[in-house]
Image (cartoon, rainbow, N blue to C red; front, top):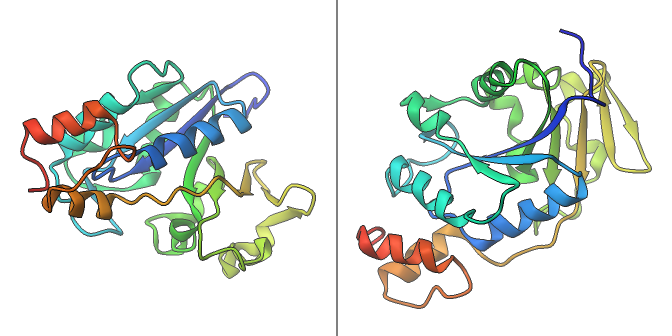
Length: 221
């Protein structure tokens, strides 16, 4: 179906393990949401991430914690589509799901970090993504020296035109990859889990509602 990017809903898609979700996730995606003037951004907790270790908390708990984190933020939603799938989480299936759900009347923006994007050539059906969705690739501490031209897999580089002015790549399909700097947050889910296990403070790292949920469900002990 022919794209209509001017009329379609600009929809952000942000997947992850969220084990647990923290303010770094929320604040970074707020920044992206506002910068790209997205109509809505959907958080998508993975059931079994294909490229990461098995999460510590069960997917139903991680899903609930993300829901608690975005309460009151009307422009954020949470989807359990990958949790319900009950198998390895493949991103191409997620993009297909949302396009079908919105009857192809969306302009999707797949949000992820540069550390994950640099592994995209190992993803299932990876060339498919670039003809089906825009990408917003967020820079990370430790990756500042990577030149934008070097983030694309070499075998598909000829399918893109590079715009020096805004560090974006336009695919032959019309979709773009946007490579952006975001405010860095010194917060990690690994550190939070260790703090909880050791009985240390997590104030300022996760919301009070998430902290209470973790405590009530004896997670990360």
